[in-house]
Image: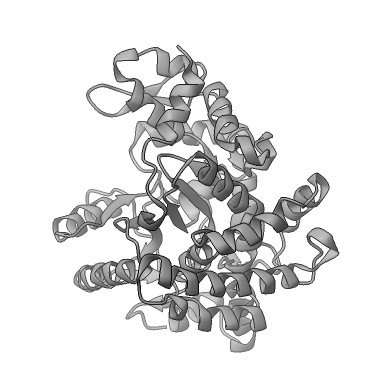
Length: 431
């Protein structure tokens, strides 16, 4: 049995016509009690993340869904949609439900992508064998895995592809520009009670979680445009397994490769292939669609901006082909340098072709708006420019939110606690 081809077939099993391509968005968030302490993930004598998940699910009669991340971060996931306006409407409905639950339970929200105060050892891990196995592995693999699991939030874009060729091209482009996307939408201004400076901390945390299964596709030798899906499937089958799902639910340790894990239960082949695909944590990864994962959770009111930016770049064939012509000419050395450069959010750093990061972001921004105009015609939808254009102008002029927030904090003269409470925490806390 050729497991590589089985994995590849699973990845390509849901291809859609070009004009039926849908997008999904997942958004994570931090929650706090009225003492500005993180909401406990699971605590019997206090309202917890588990309670929040249960309550918000009970109020949801819509197509979107919820889950809980390892440190109690709540994740909202939209339904797949042709238009980001449909997703915005769903998100607005979710916010109404969430607002009411937060008010009733004295919960507060912080719209940052990095926990500003607590270290991971102060945040209890969710009671899950799967997450415990991941945590134990990451402790051995690199330095910052616990920070990733418990102390970060993100926005994720899921995109359908129309064919193997399209999947190859989308993944190649997305993997090439992930460092630039991470810089532009960086929203991780504070860590351990202080400013991070020009560090792009969430990117750095993911780069130091598990080198064997995180990072860019490029880092794992998955870099040939014509064979991305093939190479990814081959890489997955040789990856070390973290866990295997049990027939009755839950997960257990499995010692061996993904191929060995999949073949250990041939009656559930497809199920275990999907499990294997979930155990890759690259910035760009395949399931039955493409996941783009390197972008920080945006500030309040800007949640759909990154999705609009990426959609404009890769879901219009006209713009996709223009961008593909550019990034396919970047050399190996240029791509390595760009990945390393993303550890800093300075727009003045050099990127490919000796152009600055700022120059490349301006170039991508122009293409993005062109692509959004094209999407209006392709999908017969309302133009999505308003979801990104004002925000984009601000970011290009004033820099990422990570820099903007630190500048405001410095000028406030307040302690970090009071600054966040007064300006960035949805709260009734008094200082």
